[in-house]
Length: 468
Ligand code: 5GP
Ligand code: SF4
Ligand code: MG
Image (tube, rainbow, N blue to C red; front, top):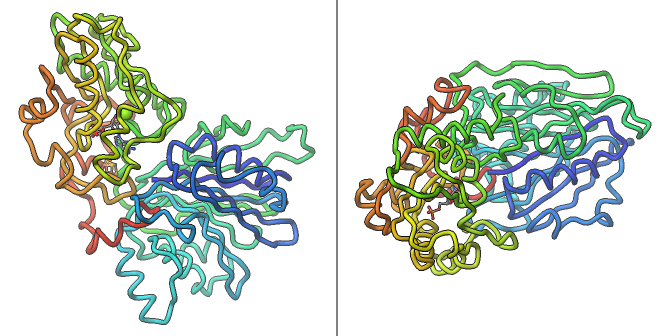
């Protein structure tokens, strides 16, 4: 998973992209990058491993002058965190330069790459995104949006893209609409002397950050080009059924964003309310969340069940997400570093712990132990999504089936394994019905096993970039 942003029409485009990346940090913490194109058409990039705040400072940004910029935050499997994989990619070709940032995962990247290598292409990274750059460079079309359309024909899977070719900014979303991408506009009276400007971003929270107004989603299958003459929209790719990722609402996006046209906060609250109706906890004394991702769902659960919502787990904000630890031992230790329980609230109580999802079970097991040590009498776990039984091939880095606890054990067995007094998951139908813009048009493959595309031929090899 990744966050992307593209800005055009503001003199300080790279700086705006930089600010926007702070708001997209939750979508990827392994690396960050910005490509800026100056007014003579010269492109420069800054790329760094780690967080936006650690890796990119104002001094590095200074040379990125001009009114066109794209940015990227990357989240990937451990082991592929190398500078070559940092996006946006920036390459030179006979037509000038191509800068490209990708959120998603191209499911036929292996086949496309082999085909390109057979024709003599040389790859410098191990991510699935580089095939797009090669395919773009091969197009003989004259307009940038036609070049991008040529590159995308035959590409399968999930992609939201921000691209610069020359001084043209392009945004594209795959026809299934797996990942979110929005368009915003700067007010024309922005006090910077520039007449408005356009911004594309994974989530609307980045538009809020940079002071742009949300205009609309980039539609599934749409390519939008922005240059000095204005904005052009086209739909050059064959239409496909809608497969928006339901997990964006459950976990990934920020609650202050509008995703797929719906407030994430409202979706999470509704998931929690529905969970309370499906899996009530009679006799419970309080509800708490596993902060921050399940805050809204836990609040919804508490409201619906008429129970007090308490902050019984405190999260240390100075450590990253637990998944990033490559080893199990590292992950175990990190649960304790990341959370602590509030004894004063929990002692002697029958409590409901709400989380948005259980993936491996590592975090949950550690938390249950912690909550019991803090004196809770009974711990009832409620999960605002259905059991995750399969991997994601479309850009979220869920582990292989063998590591997914719900792929291996029944709900009762999971409850025993986690050490909870009871465990209740939201049903699949309930999850889809709760999302305000549902239940149609969503991908639920990792919950249901209904994969809309064939599994990638070599998924291990595909799990290297962001892509992934
Ligand atoms: P587990 O109990 O499976 O070890 O961890 C579940 C926790 O991880 C939940 O709190 C959930 O919010 C979070 N989570 C769910 N999916 C992902 C993901 O794709 N990446 C990360 N970093 N965390 C996730
Ligand atoms: Fe989202 Fe799951 Fe579908 Fe992946 S498989 S796109 S995480 S719903
Ligand atoms: Mg969480």
